[in-house]
Image (tube, rainbow over all chains, first blue to last red; front, side, top):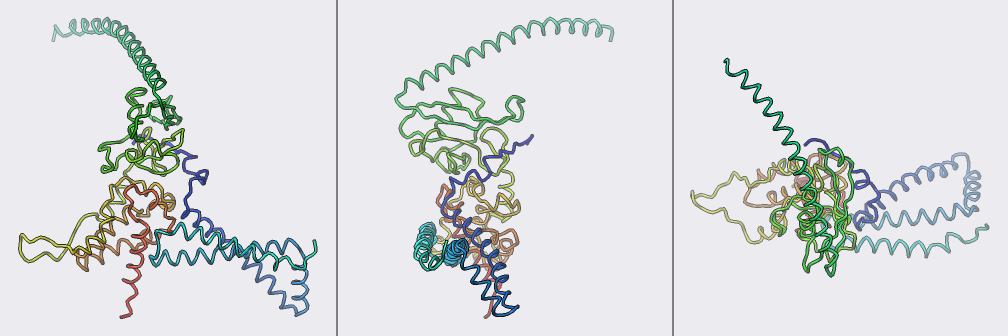
Length: 131
Length: 293
């Protein structure tokens, strides 16, 4: 072969419009996984304020929970966690070789279920917070 | 020797005059060819205009051997539509009526040879198996992604073939039947198990659609793993041969690279459940290595 041309746009992520269900599931699973890893560190940081006494921990938590943005982030965290769990179950079935022909439907189902659970959780998460 | 010198002089002058004449003739020829080409294109455009229905193709063009064509571009072709016309039919019409330099692979035109896997409207399809009427216009036709383009729609398949060969895609066994002329019989159930995996036509659509294969050149790819599945699951090959096949498959760049994106299964023109086969081989590999009994 003489030479070959790198076709740039053909192969980069501008193709996302043509992604199918399985591809989206993979991308969302990766994304939510990394978000959860990131959250783990914040989680440990907040919990470790308890090392300097019970009062310090209570103060930190109360200060954080009084912020609207933290409440909204919590809703986001729930969305990410729920999707990761549900899609994880879907992947478990894929690994067991069960229902592979319905893998796209199970992805949509996990999306919808995530949406329902998140919407249902909003009143709980946003109660008693002042803007 | 003495006669050779004047002869060569004569020859030279002869070639000179000949070359002058030839140049003139060549120029005329070229002119005529251009006129013919223009006329043909005009006729084709006329035909396309007078047809009831035309399809607008946008075809990827690239030719590394012609300096003006080294920058890839998209050419537009308007092809008169006939009922039942496939993408391959349209490409052939465009080649025959507009531009004879349009290059693409094709052979059997019935989804068996696996030569004309193309990237049509953002998905890997066989040109001969894709109806134009199923596509939205303009129909964008590109060479397979994640492969080097040789010219226009032709990609370099060498890497794909290497991966296919690396799994030893042929029947081999240590346990031959007793009689010299006995057949190697397979149970109906076993045949049914490998049935779908035997349908592979080596078109490379799955390999091209696979995100992992794009990023990892050593990954065997869906087609090669499917080929290995076809023989690993064949009971006639015997246990030691299955071990050998699993050893190839469970390497670092074997079955474990698959991340179940299902892209290969979506695009396979022969509807082979590739992901299912890869997953089954993963389970086989685990069972093979974890024996508690």
